[in-house]
Length: 377
Image (cartoon, rainbow, N blue to C red; front, side, top):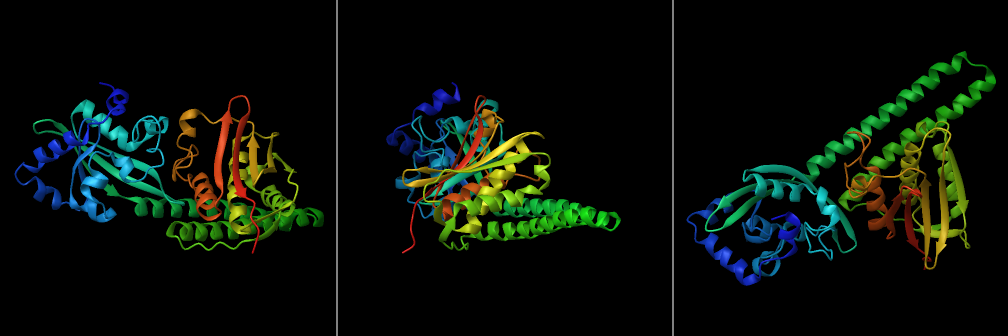
């Protein structure tokens, strides 16, 4: 049976309770699972939880029968893709690239132990969390066939490694460019020196900006980031972004067009965080286009919201679109993958906006953030 057909239906609670009773009757099974420090659950053929050790219940303060029995792992972790109209966890288009579902399917098909990493974007209320999980799935047969699934949370470990790797990678690149410019200055005429010193100043600002960005991400993920709202002039916000990107290495022989179609020309937001979100959008767009091409940074009114958008003429393949906001996922190599994730985290959890994108072969790609029109009391 295909995974689509198998996950389209679920066993009723009475069958789940029968499976639980069957497993509970196996000698030492509770003691064995209780001795494990990992979250361990047992799934039926529909990937529903029929048994769990106490780690899962204690970690999330769940009631077994009310919160766990009959649900699927992605639903326990509040995965944003598990709440869909196609059948829940494992059934949406985005689930096709889920490491947990891949582990389950391979284990069922090969009837052998499989381990995969799984990245889950979890939403609890207004808060967004990125979870990195190591999922081990092992088929077993009691009276029926089941999967024993062990789940280790490796979020903090992966986050620390990734942020440090990206931080030092970017800092070293910019510092190398700065050193190159400084080495050239003594051999240039006065007019050329002035131009190159301007470039050096811009590179210095970029180094400072990267350090601040690192600090912001650490605070944002720990929930310690403070939001400072004030009235911002949209023209100035857009101009600042244009000036910032002008000497960035991703902008070499590329252009940025800036448009402001808003009526009020102002918005109430946190300037530092809004600039961070838009700068990531601008950098991504610049990296996507070729020399001689341009991107468009634009602000427009949308009823009770203001939309800031960045457009480029390239298309993002569908399989990449489905994973675009996951931390550490990137098409640009191992040292990337925080930009789009931070857009979502900062733009939605802290600025209370909506961050998304569209991408088609005909129209290209547009990333945007919609922010509510609010006023200071």
